[in-house]
Length: 339
Ligand code: NAD
Image (cartoon, rainbow, N blue to C red; front, side, top):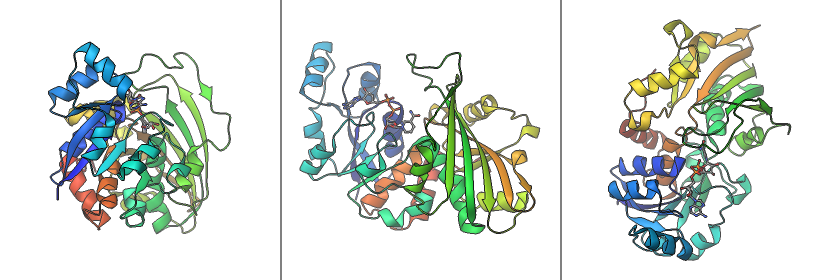
């Protein structure tokens, strides 16, 4: 079966999910839906993705701009087995998908209660098999789960504190800031801690976030009290066995997120994306045998992309084994080259 996948919302995440779907041999892009006939819409057509207007109002804009569409989202859901909803949070398409009887995956901007099931391929693939609706948590949350889940499985996490230094906005966005300030998120915990618990309900985690004037990556400073004693090498060995965790080193000249993105560009992947969470190998420290400290960087535009591909396989039960799905996705996207 080649699953027919619709992508609703073709921005930062949507266009990456579309390309990742197109790179698989067990699914194809049935179409992408957009509100505006902008450059992204025109490029989607050039890539050969059937283009749909999100609604009748958008269809009129498409017509006026001379951009040909194949219909509206109502038409697209009829020729799709599943929709990956990459629209901004609270766009409100759940009722439309329910009416069409189509499965759907949302992104981390939505509340966990929208689907009551959040997805991470390593942590709960099997739990999501055959589900109608799931949500892939945000880039930061996915990043935290990637490294905390293996730690919890191997050593046990008594408690974790993650301080997140967040990028202000994405590189393609010229509207948001801050551009010359550091902005603390005053809510405690930041929404990321409860969001991690939407996948790992028993994990005792607290999160704090600040926004800084950078666009390329987020950086996390994580402190974990482990239940079983460990060394830094033992922690690194555990992460090495899990997919989508990559290692960088200050001693190799990777002093900041700037060099990580330079390394990502050197890997020559699609859009220079870094789907893996980058952990500084020489920034992993264990004090008193049980208190672990580490730094990791998250490429916010792309780390959730492989998770979306695996979520498609889980919901449509194309592959029942999560590890096999992850291996297939990772091979198709070139993940695993930096270990
Ligand atoms: P974006 O603004 O880059 O893209 C959203 C796209 O949806 C745009 O093409 C926009 O024109 C379109 N759109 C807007 N309203 C729409 C509507 N009513 N119907 C159909 N399309 C509509 O946003 P994004 O960064 O790709 O974020 C999408 C989702 O992914 C959000 O839930 C966000 O929280 C989540 N997310 C974003 C990031 C990130 O860093 N950018 C990371 C992980 C998850």
